[in-house]
Image (cartoon, rainbow, N blue to C red):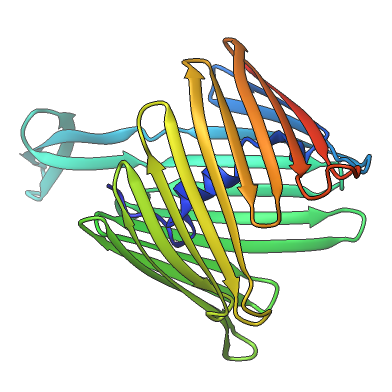
Length: 324
């Protein structure tokens, strides 16, 4: 298996516990469309249980890699005598099978721009394998017209068979840098991350993680916030229909209380699935996802506080996704 990024060591269990639970928003709508010239548009809108609404318009252009091209050139040199008995040389370059070899390669580039309801403009430019295989660079820009605030970031990802490293640079704030790396061998994973403030010349935070990953199950232990918050996560793909996972979290600064979440996913048929989870505080959530027709997905979700069933603490949410 490929070595994940540091933040993805516990991705399987985190996705099972957090994704596709639609009660978090009262209503959500997502519309996706693709054009023939590799431009993808996405419009999202959400309404919270408090009545606030938010939206996002995103456009993504992908210039796919053109691959490797080789061109062979044969060089012909002709000579002739002029009246002054000096040599004149004429050089002709012609495409042939033998001769000089020319090399050309174009890496893939992705440009993503977005505009949301808080009037923030974001731009991201990604380039993969431009310098060497496995290296991806991202340039991110942010602009708030109302406050004239700007942001600029540079992210670098480098991935090899047994290594996955990342570096995130905030060029205007600080500047600061966050670097993480994961080394993997035979399913075993060891990773760490650190933040650095250039002006203060000091490490601002650090984290570490270990894990074991197979196609059917993963387990990990992570320590974040200067190794003050620890979490242990487990995910198991029982069979083609059933998935199960759990996560325990302990904050060493807040006491001895350990938070626990347990979740399961059951695929009802090829076009629908149901999820359920519960935590140590007695809050349970259920979700149902169904593909109504190609490109149209409906999601329904609800959460219940089992210790306060007589109070109005429960939440219900819906989600529609249209993908053309």
